[in-house]
Length: 159
Image 1 (cartoon, rainbow, N blue to C red):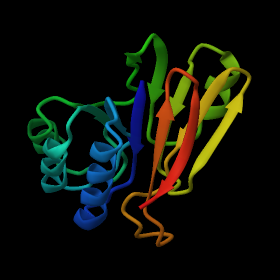
Image 2: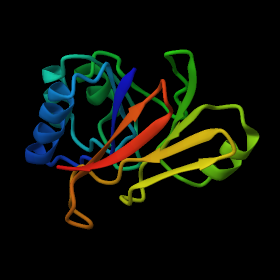
Image 3: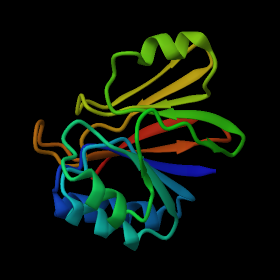
Image 4: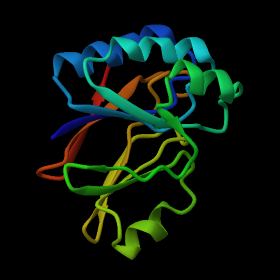
C-alpha cells in the first residue's frame, strides 16, 4: 500500500495543489497530513484527492471547528493512531517524543511535521517520516513523502 505524507502546507495553495496532483498521479491509496494546514480554505483542496486522507491539527491551525467541518471529520487531535495495511501508525505534529516512541517498538510508522525539515530514518524496526514543508515558506523547498507500507520504505519528493 502506497501512502502519501504531507505536512506544514501553511495555506500555500499552489504547492498544496502540486502535492495533491502528485499523489493522484502516483495513485496513492491514502494520504496523511501531519498538521499546520493553517486556514480552513486550504482543506477544501483535499477534496481533489482520489483517495481517503486523514490528518491532525498542528500548532498553527487556528479555526479548528471550521477545519474539522471542512475536512468532513478527517482532521483529528493528536496523537492520531490509525492502522493501515496492518501497520500501526502514530501521527503527531511536534517532534519531541518521536525518538522515545520509536525506541518503544510499538509502532511500525511514526509520522510527524513541525520542523519543516525532511526526515526519514529507522529506529529499531520503526520507520520515522517527516515529509518536510509542503508550504515551502521557511526553507523554500516544497516536499512531501511517499511511503510503501508493504516494504516500509519511504522517500522525500521535491515538488
